Amino acid sequence: MGKSSNLKEPLRTQFASDNYSGICPEAWAALEKGNKGHSRGYGEDSWTESVSDRIREIFEIDCEVFFVFNGTAANSLALASMCNSYHSILCHEYAHIERDECGAPEFFSHGTKVLLLPGQNGKVNPRAIEEEVLRRSDIHYPKPRAVSITQATEFGTVYTIPELQAVQEMTRKFHLRLHMDGARFANAVACLGVAPKEITWKVGVDILCFGGTKNGLGVGDAVVFFDHELAREFEYRCKQSGQLASKMRFLSAPWLGLLENDVWLRNAQHSNQMASLLEKRLAEIPGVSILFPREANSVFAELSRPVIREMNQRGWIFYSFIGDGGCRFMCSWDTTEDDVNQLADDLQELTALHHKE
Picture: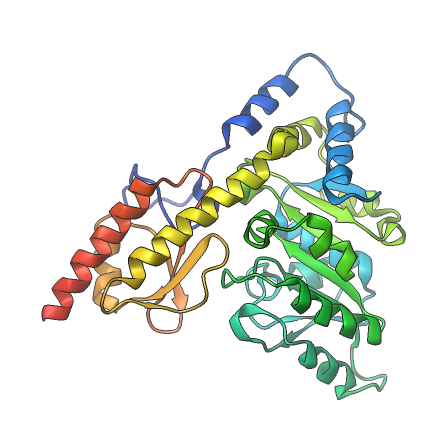
């Protein structure tokens, strides 16, 4: 973030994150179209109104929609609208709100505690929700108030409808709110091939943080309230936290380009397909182990330390943050088959070389 680096930025497509990709053409065109003349500020423009209506069409329900600059703000402000400072939020132990948001959920909720739950492949175990709620009920313990799930998960897996229904059963049983971190929600919809409503409000999701940045936008996430009561005065939270864009059309207009003609879904289908190809290539390489089921647009694989080091030396950038050698390769809306094959060819060559040693 503005820091100098001795690493020369490669020109090739990278697999570290779908945040590395640019703005898709449809979103760019909509942004350019929105940059004509004058328009009302602070969300009172026709672009924001049109996109909000389009989101209601996609989810087939009347919902409240707000636009913020990024996913951290979306998640943190949404959770704060569900909780008081003495409450707690239950989430998976590897959830983004716990591992990668610098305490923002606690900060914006003025101290709500995040409690961690186990679960295979990045998914919350519904029984763990019950165990955590029943662990203590005295006044000295932060009272569980909300469950946060990630769809698709941090490990690239996707909750099925029955799995979501099992979570809903527990949240209903204990009168908990349900938040969905949907930074890669589009990839989950593409994976399951279902209508968005089937994995949101129909399974009890109260608030969805609908990510666009990782699916072809330059900036901006949508906070979608299926429970209207929770949306009361949310605009004040946005303003106070510096998330109310004065020229809101520049956040919302690209969304229109993404959502019209289901570009958002096609982008997600493409990035999922590229990840599927990458998984197939990596699974064929002796010495490379696939760590989690590939269901969205990422592949997790275990590589040896020498191979990781030499891949980096060849200019490949990817995350290696799970255990000793666990790596994440993330595909984007603009990843091509050639990109995937170049990465896989280098991995195959280096892995074979070190196997001989």
